[in-house]
Length: 371
Image 1 (cartoon, rainbow, N blue to C red):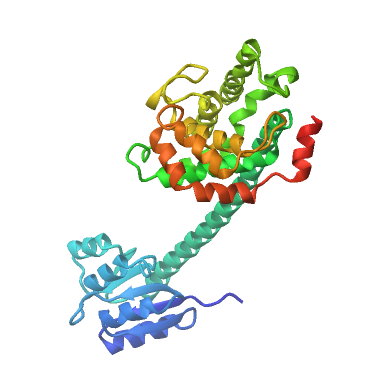
Image 2 (image 1 turned 135 degrees about the vertical axis):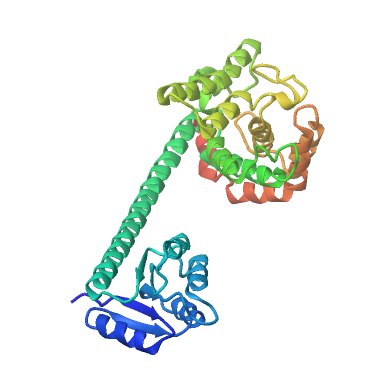
């Protein structure tokens, strides 16, 4: 058997309350109030309240003001109000409906009309609540599906990035370190007037997720160059530099396939193409300088160089954190955006912590030597 719905009867005349209670008690639970102030308090403390029958002419707080207060409070605004009053002028009814009432009945009461109007409003309220529950369920399902798709996207990104790393003299932990360096720098620089417009909370998360794709273009570099243990000659280096172009072109293919871009793909493309640019214009592939270099690429430049310095490779030993920081300082305003480099210097302890957390294992280093 379904639970009875609850109606609050508000009237300052006891005979009216008695009559309405007698008429409604068989089908509904009823509560009563003899003043507007009491009605508001009951409504606030009755989460199961389904409908209010409200008189207009009451001493103190009248029905119109009571309705106004009920509709102004989010806790009670959803409760349908039917005015039940002897005020029968058109302007009186208009006033009641303007204040948010769903219906307006005049005394003397016609029981069949009262039952019909009450039943209609309670049916509408039930239908609205069911629709809201369905919307909540749908929103939850959409959120769950979105989260699943996001996990799949993140996994695909890491798989693509790892594919590039396995061909290079680097490990998967390089990806984790650099994306954490980038996020750490971005959060620190977020209040800075030069970076605030770009480094929103949403964009920082997208930078973190797109950072692993910075070297995706290395899949297009021949092994004889990518895995060469010594220094590259001039021609070999020109070919190596093309990894930035290949990375950009890879992201462009995705954008063309989608028919549009988004912030994630934009950051991924910027990082892949411009992370080898230098502040003074001596980098590649376009010799960009200063603010012409995208913010995303300037952050990645610091992250990537620091990690390259502290990491052991077949052609070099790892620098200590202190030596790496000293080398980085020399690149201020030449290799690196001075503000980004200053942020790195303030955060060097956090960089060291990230490097320690995601340090390469002996197996990782051994695998590099085997390649």
